[in-house]
Length: 370
Image 1 (cartoon, rainbow, N blue to C red):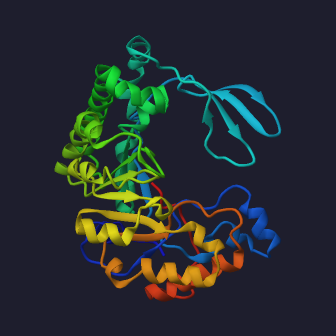
Image 2: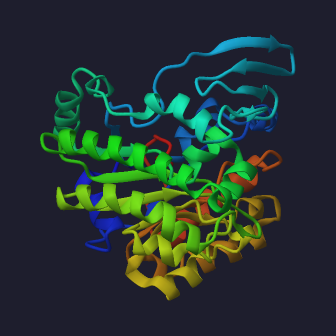
């Protein structure tokens, strides 16, 4: 079912809840389509439209908020992988059979000198606002689409340039470098959003970080407070004053230890909430109440553990307390290879029953990770 813009905003800001929202955040992993075809799946099941998931139509503002310039240049291609130069200037490898995101083999930035060479590609220019941006946003609003602004991550963008190890060391060894990077990116984004939001209303600010693993965040609350918080607040304070209602962060891994400092930046929403690493949406709701909306949270691994385990997971995660707003129910990441089609069908049917949703929904699906 398609959610109306205002209906979605009410749900995610703990306002009026017309009905629970049940989605697939990201879709399937490479190779699952072949497995399901062998098990008798229809093409509509393969592309997920047969399951009638909820979704909110989204319009992403047509502006360039991060690195501009650069080009892709093929270096090597085999039946198993592709190696190419990306727009950051990195050599990256994409494993064709198993991945959708390439693995960086090197990074362009090592110190202040190398940052100063790439810094001009982050400064403001009017060309960052694509022709027709405002008109397109207004048209999308008239169609009841959610207007989303995306900004570079305070951890993720420096990580793309430096790599995780070099970035984590730089917080201690070269703090002025990280400050200058986020000051530059922040100034550009503040000016862009200031111009655009005067004429086109923005509903949601989204930021991608992926800054944590099983044991926790790669940076602590002290580093977030010193480096990332001023950057976040600079952008969110502006957009919130112009009517934005959702500030959403995408980060895999265990973010429990650093959620409080991110909430202090104004963050209102987080996903995908991976239970296997300690992100329990029920416990988080008890802790943060209406301060934190969430998407995801249902263990993807449970679909390979049998129907009793699936039912137990759904009874726990979809309990009445969790249906009172601020929650979009879905798997905590892509549907894993090895997930039996019959168990996935059972999962969808059972979740819809518990949530009181139409057992025979209208076909449709759209990725809700945005």
